[in-house]
Image: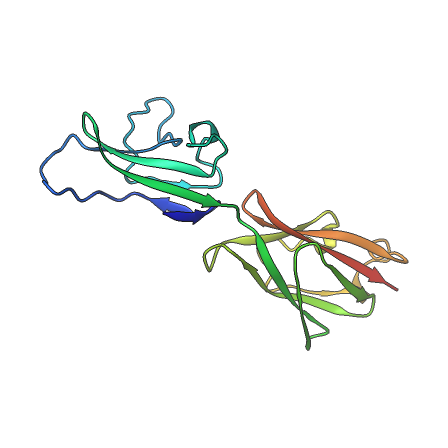
Length: 188
């Protein structure tokens, strides 16, 4: 099964060819549902692949390939869980309410101090509706998770924010995981 790092999943149950065996455990290797009492039974827990899995228990020890084992006194089934890194594909913005532009990670959005900018869409390899947020070292440009509702009016920002020529980075995150970064340059 392939997922993107940061996706969440839950093992609800397993279907056995011979039902009735109550001593079946489902063990997601690298996950501890209860660190104080790790029974190896992981059904019913929502597992965040970006933070809940321990790299040292992955197959290759790098955090990209995990096993889910169905066990009684022996392994009777296994599922390979493959994790791809989360990444930003592009950011769609509206400049001055009408000009639509698309930017890929690492590109620079060039603006004049008299313009407005609104983030219209963030496309990534994550599931639709993933709670992405936008962060910036410049507080006036820190949009957080409400990035869709905010229009930045550059001419209304204090002069200290947009100096003669300012540059800063916008970081797109899934919870604590950075998935991409773009740059903004504001000219007078």
